[in-house]
Length: 434
Image (cartoon, rainbow, N blue to C red; front, top):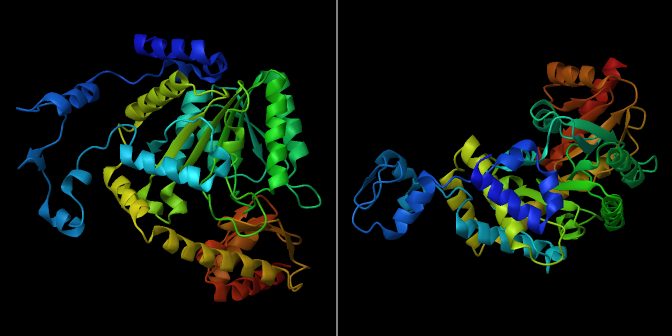
C-alpha cells in the first residue's frame, strides 16, 4: 500500500474507524499523489521567472487558444475556459454550491459535511462511490422501481448484489416497512449495507412525504444502532423539482452526523437542477456520523475522491464549471429557475388531471408521482414492450418500457397542451393490441 494511502487510512482509523471499515479494498488503497499536480501548484505560487511545469501551451501570459473557438466564447476570459480545472473543481464553484445546498436544505444547517467535490455529472459520482465503497458481494439496497444504470455501475462494474424492495404499498405510499425489512436482512447477512435513495425517483416521479422521509431515516438509524455499517447515498439528480405535498429537501441533511456507523453521501449537480444536461457538472459531498466537526475524516475522503478522479479522468471540464459559476452569480438566476419550475409543475399537474379523468381505467392505472421528470403507467391488458414498439411503429410516439407492465412517460419533454393527445394515443394503441 502506498504510504500516502496508509496515512489517510490512519486518519480514518483514529477519527472514524467505521468509515474505514466501509471502504472497499480499492477505497483503502486510494490516495492523491504528490506528483505533477502538487509540484505545479507550488510553482504557480512561487515560479515568478519561468513556470515549466504543467502541460499546457501558453502565449502572451495566458493559455494558447484558437481564435475560431474564442470568437464563440468571447464573453469569457481564456483562463476560465482553456486551462485545466483543479482536481476537486474550481474553489469558487464548490463554495457557491455549498451555499446553495444550505439555502435549499434547512436540515443541513448546523451539520458538518465536506466541501462538495466536482464530478463529471452525477453518474460519475455514482461511479466514484462504487469504486470507493463497494467490494464484490456487497449488498446494495434499492426499490424495485429503479434507474437501470445502477445495475451497470454497481452490479456489473463493481460486483454488488442488488437487494430490492417494493417501492409502494398497496395503498400507494412509499413502502418504508419493506425497505426496513430488506435493510435488516442485509445487516444480518453482511454487517454492511449500501443504501441508495433517489428522490425524486426515476422512473416513478415520486418523492416521499415528510413523514415517510422521517421513517426512512429512523429505519437507517435503527439498523446502524444494531451494529451495521451503512453507506447512505442520496441521488438528488432531480432535486428541486417538487410539485405537490412531499419532502422539499434532500434526506442528506437528516442523515448527516446521525450515527457513527452511517456515512452519508450526497450526489447532485447542475445537470437537471439548472437545465444544463450537456454541461456534465455534478458534485459529491460527504457527511460522517460524528456530531462534532471531523475535519480529518472529511480531508481523507476528499483526497481519496481526488485520487480516483485523477486516476480515471484526471479532472473535470473547465468551461462548464465557469458557465455554472456565472449562472449561480447571476441576479436573474433564481427568478429564471422558478419560471422553468412552474412550467414543469404545469406539465405534471396536467398529466395527473388527464389521467384522473376516468377515461383510461380499462387500460391502466398509474403509480404515485409528485415530482421530477417522469411518471409510470401500470398496464392491465398488454405487454409494455409490445406497446412501446407499436407506439413507435404506428403512431410515432416514444416511451420507455420497464418490465412487462410498466411504461415510463417523461412529461418533462411534452408541452402542457399536448399531454391530452399523448395519452389518447397511448390508449388507442392499447386498444389496437387488445
